[in-house]
Structures are given as structure tokens and as C-alpha cells.
Image (cartoon, rainbow, N blue to C red; front, top):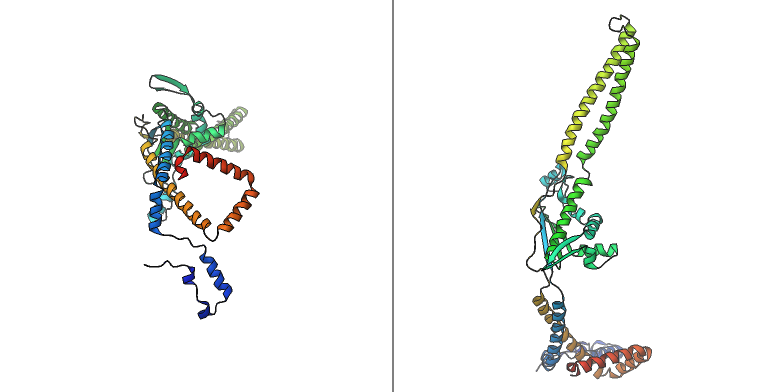
Length: 381
């Protein structure tokens, strides 16, 4: 039968290597702290403690089952938004030469900003404070999400709304997924619908684009050009009234001034006409430039729960409980080995010092341990 190797076996011989007796004593001291690990002994230990392991596993599984069955079912409604807009010329050139990274350049009408808009406090606050009417069986409810969560604090309410909301974008296709999970199927669908309505409202009334800015600029320039044209026409009219015979006059000064004023009127008139045409075209561009929320899948009415998956979670809790129980058995075994050997005196001294230093903690631990042993007979083993 093979013998276990310890630090004594690995330590060099004092007589052969010339190591001092102090070093040899250190090796011998170190050997005192070696745990006697034997696989078959550990297996027998687990068999002998099977009631404790089984009891702890069943207890945790029962607690998990009770907790999970007390939790209500949750239902998730989802919607899918199609991408809009196109990549800019710079982004297309980067893709062509293979320099494009994770950050993509989209035009300002692209749907790439939709997730940012939907996650903004502006939209979240509007969704949280809107009224929702839905049915749950035969009951009809009209509540806000603040009532649903029972939260009045605005910051906590935003966190709660974001916790039931999932917004993501497919990096390859650009599709945007919006999902909301609540205890009621109709409420989940109503909240997703409200998200889409808030996004549409933002696009129509708050989102600024280059075409919109251009239309406003041309409108201001058109007003200025009209005022300048009217002034030039007024100056020409005033000059003609002063020189009533301008049509038959042969005076060089009169003809010169008359020609200058007429040219100014012509230039101002052409400028005004050009700006008026561009302004009309810009107004048409603004109508085409408004980002449109194009739905691939409208908000769904969930018929199957999205959680909790009780059976899977109970099985998982059982696996974790077994691992935890085995770990406790091993730790207690190793502690017994450590405290029953040559270090027993040191352990007793340390325990006395701890008790004297923390008497209240010691009494609390003893009280908890006594309670657990009385309520859990398996712990007595």
C-alpha cells in the first residue's frame, strides 16, 4: 500500500544538505498543517451525512418552491420596428475599404436613435404617468405604472419602468425590439403601444432635422427679401413721383438714377422669386423628412407566460443546495481535523480569546445555533 507524501518527505535531509536544525524544525512545523485527504474517506463521509445533505436540499427546494409559487405569472408583449434612414456616404466609404468599426454613421432620419429616444427620461416619464385601461379576467382596471408599482419617487419610478422594459437593436439588420413585461397581458401590450406613440410624437413635434432647419432658414430669408423688395419698389415709385416727366426726360442724371432703381427692383424681385420657390420645395422636403415609425410586428397580446419558470428554478435550487450541503460537510470535516490534532490547544486558546473579545456575538451565535438544532433535527447528526 502506498504511503501519503507529506512535507517531511519533501524536506531535504539535514545531514546530507547541511540545512540547519532551525530550517528542519520549520519543515516539521509546516507538516502539522497538512490535511489528511482521502477520497474514499470523503466518500464515506458523504454517505454517513446523507440525511443532512438530503434534508438541506429538500428544505431549500421547498422554500424555493413556496417562494416561486407565491410569485405571480408575468407576460411580455413585444413589437418590432423596421429600420429607416440610410448610411451616410462616409459610412459607405468606410465599409468599402474595410475600415468600419462598431460605430456606424447614419443620416439624421435613421432609426438608430430610436433606442436612445425610448430610453430617455422624457419618454419614460410620459409612459409612467399615462393612464392604462385593461382587463384581467372579468375585472377592468384603469391605473398608471406609478399605481402598478406603488412608487411615488420619480427616480425610483424610472428605474422600475426600465426594469420591465427591454429595448434592443439588431446590429446586423437594424431592427428594433421593444418589450414590456408585467403581470397582466393587456397591460403589457398597452405599455408597448404607448412607447410607440411617444416615439411617433417625438418624431413629429420634437425631433429636428436638416430639412426642417433649412425650411425655417428659408422662411426667415424670404421675409427679409420681401421687405427689401418692397423698399426698392417704394424708392422707385417715390423717384418717379418726383420726376413725373421721366418717360420723356432727356436728363442723364434722371435716366441714370431711374435705371439704377429699376435694376435694384429687378434684382430684389428675382431674389424673392428664387427664395419663394426654394421655400416651397423645402416645405415638401420637411414632409418627406419626418422619420416614420414603421412596424414589422405590432404590439402583441401574450397568451403564454414569460416567467417565472418554476420547475427549472426549483431544480436549479436543488443542485445549488446539494453543492452547498457537500461543501458544509467537507468544511466541518476539515475543521474537525484541524482542531483535534496537535493544534487543538492553539484552537482552544483562540476560541477563548474570541469569546472574551466579542461576548455579545458569541451569545448571539450560540442562540442561533441552538434554535437551528432544535428546529432541524438533521443538524444534530
